Each structure stands twice: as C-alpha cells, then as structure tokens.
Length: 177
Image 1 (spheres, rainbow, N blue to C red):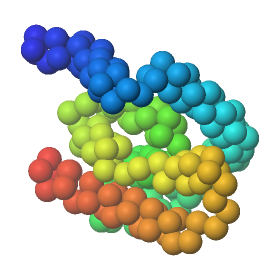
Image 2 (image 1 turned 180 degrees about the vertical axis):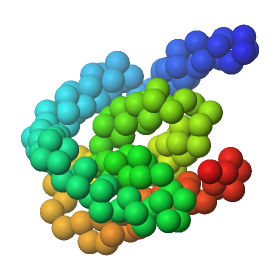
Image 3 (image 1 turned 30 degrees about the horizontal axis):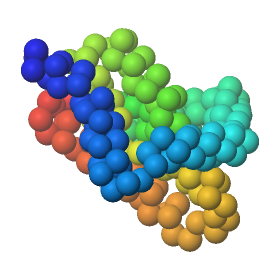
Image 4 (image 1 turned 180 degrees about the horizontal axis):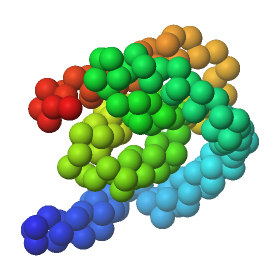
C-alpha cells in the first residue's frame, strides 16, 4: 500500500515533467501551448453548460415525477421471478444518463444493504460495467457541434444493456442471490 501511495503521489508531477522536458527538447513553446490549451478548455467548458443544464433538468423531472418508481413497480414481478432485485433498476436506468446520479444511487445501495451484500456487489459491478452514454453523446457531440449521432446512441445503449446483463449474470454466478 505504501508503494501505491507513493506512486500515486508522484505520477502526475512526473507526467507533467516528462511533457515539459519533451516539449523543450522538441523546441515547442510549452508555456504558450499550455496557455492556449487552457483557453480552449474554458471555451469548451462554457459551451457544454446548456447541454448539461438541459440533461440535469430532464433527470430531475424524470425522478420527481414518479415515472422511475412507476417503471420499477411495473418490472418488479418479472424481476423477482428471475431473481434480480428490483432495487437495482433505478441504477440501471440512471447510469446511461448521469454518472453522478448513478454514483449517488450506488452509494445509497451500498450504505443501505452493505458493501458485501448481493445488491452492493451488483451495484458496484454494474457501475463499473456500464457508461454514461447519453451524457457522453450530449456533452461531447454538443461540444463539437455534431447534430446527427448516427448509430452512436443505439450502439451505446446496447453496450450498456449488455453491461447490465453481464453484471447480473456474473455477480449472480460468483456471489449468488
């Protein structure tokens, strides 16, 4: 543990030092390049704010309206029949939309049921096996001005579905329910 702590303490300054040395060796104006990159980063951060606000409002409306609870209630009998706890559904629904909301739900499930419980393990594996597809498409496509997503949404959501199913199967196999 001591080695990992030491490495994690030094890795970022080491990477920055390597970049500066490499840039200097290649005779690149490193400080000016850093400042230019910072300016571009601020422009991108400001340009994605409307997309973030729109997505966060939509999530809040979805949760506050009770639609999520209604959806979970509809699925509960079928999920209980196949041995999947219904408490995991809100996490599976929110995870493609918002990573922060999903992390909050995962933390809540772990705090409620315990980290070594089936639900705690399933929430942890599901959190790591899926991605924030809608967030990524909204923010990154919005930042670069892409209006037509093509098949990116379908493929991203399909990958999330596979991640959810794989999480359930793997956690059920290794830890049982």
